[in-house]
Image (tube, rainbow, N blue to C red; front, side, top):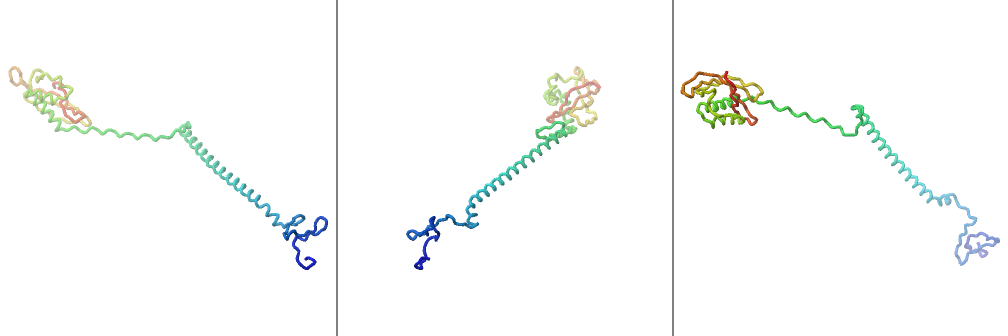
Length: 222
């Protein structure tokens, strides 16, 4: 308080010479020399530094955790690779990184040959033997297997023509495409035209890969 009972503006503290300092121009000047600060005021001045330190610690902890996770994944993968190679080495004696190939499936066995058709065999013999009786070279070649057609030179068998014929009973073997058949032949003398007795001959009946039936080869006299 002033001597006139009015409040003085200022900090009310003495100067260096013990003189009381008055405010200038009515403005308050804060002089903090010798001032005492509370604990909260001192602590507040370091908030910025503490915050920065906490952030760096969080970054370091997060980075360390990510590094550990990556290391765990890598170690697990390497352990799996080693175990796989050891297993292959134990099975085959040599460790290999080559892929294991499954065995190729076994191809199915080709189907067995279907039995020969008896009616087709009979037709082939009829055309062939009738051509010998009628001396029809075109029909004879047609009924003969292709590889022997060039050997057909005439109609005589052992110097005799065929007057009549009869296919003797036969059986067809299983799983085959050719077999022999006995045929009873009544001969005719080419010079006189007279019958010259009976003889038995053999021919081969054959089926080719296209399913065609042929008479293939006059074998011998029985």
